Amino acid sequence: MLHLPALRWGKPYESLEKQHVVHFDTGAPIAEVSQVGGGIVQRDLRSAGKAREALLQLPPDDLIERCKQAAVLFESATLPMGDGTQDVDQFVHQQSASTGLPEHMCRANMAKNAFVLSHMDQILDCLTRGLDLSILSRGYGEEGRGVTVSYQAQSPILGAVLPNNSPGVHTLWLPAVPLQVGLALKPGSQEPWTPYRMIAAFIEAGIPREAFGLYPGGHDAGGAILAKSPKSMIFGSAQTLAQYAGNPRVQAHGPGFSKILLGDDIVDDWPQYLDLMVESVLSNSGRSCINCSGIWASRHTREIAQAIAEQIGPVDVLPPADPQSKLAAFTVPAMATGTYAMIQQDLAEAGVTDMTAEYGDKLIEKEHCAYLRPMVVHADSPDRGVAAKEYMFPFVSVVECPQKDMLARIGPTLIGTVLSQDQALVSAASRSVDIDRLNVGPIPTNRLNWLQPHEGNIIDFLFRSRAYQIADMPVAAS
Image 1 (cartoon, rainbow, N blue to C red):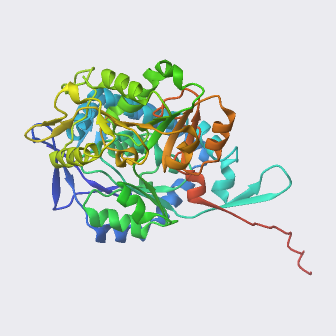
Image 2 (cartoon, one colour; image 1 turned 90 degrees about the horizontal axis):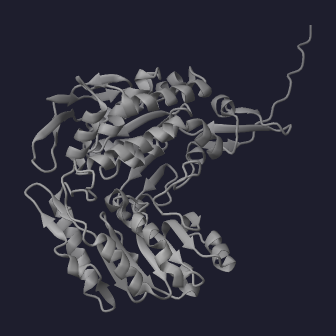
Image 3 (tube, one colour; image 1 turned 90 degrees about the vertical axis):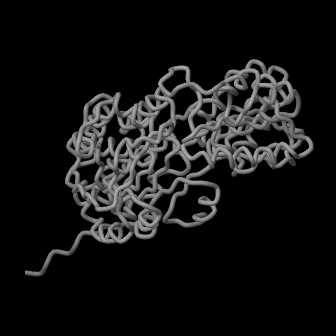
């Protein structure tokens, strides 16, 4: 059986304690992964400075070119994987088998990660607003206006506690490498494949292995990364976001509550935007924070909900290798049953209607996993509790709300697509602090422009702008 060791600043480490990665449907083991505790993580992070020192030996432009080589390797090569090797088809099959994602979605997420790596020069140019990367490397420099600028790295490494639910989120930590910041990653227990393969691609491309730490383990390993890394990321629930709110050391990523708002000027033409709404809800099995969980309009909401339900309500469970498969499994069945129970409570509230009720059972339980089939609900007011809900499958609430009240009522919204030519509405949405990424016009919520920041700018997170003045020293007296 394939064994994945921990990686302690580039050195493989096989521990006595191991955990199986199992097939979501059969329960059969796919691989075993060495587990490390928080003590080992804390010990290794004391020497985190060496990770950055290793990357500082290569200039940023060189690292960017190696990232582009890593993109090709990640997406096409047979790479070292623990005590064996892994080709692309094996990666896709193993990731699908452990996460429950259909194989074509695994390939799409693989392409997304490779795209970010292969366009790293453009992405960093945009995120730094055109700053010469040598200034970040050296710590100061001349920007071209006769003024010395300085940016100080706030951490030698970026720590990250990674999720199981969507392999696409790994794009967020990739820019650390060309920024000469090392990585200390805790892989998801069901999705170790992307970080392990990505690190293997980096190393094969000639990026120093000493820059990388992979620490599979329990909550104590993740806790140690968050406690001891000066800068880290975590992916989790709304409770996770609340736990780290206001903590400048931790960038927390959780539910998106992404929405589509139809302005009064175009809402009568809503069928024109039906495909956009369906894609926003159904893509990637509704697992992502960028999937749409709310569609808001002042009228036609029942018709909109019915039309979406007719499109996605019949979607059923298919084998993960089927290219038409649109639903991912819940690898922990209790998550599906618990989610469905919460939805039943949502539906019990007056003014809430299940528009997909006629399309059969929604909860599909199997021996080792479960599925939730798509659901569309209609809420006659933003006062209904379901209007503020998001679930990890294709689920959307269509909410009736006057346009004048929308922006005051939508709440936190990672991606807001505003369908309107009403400049007053567009301007108000531009000023709304509740919307993180604003799309104006017919842009599905799931289509991201990676040349723009996502849930904060990693440059601002890892570097601090500071004053830096230089004067010539006087010539020593003879």
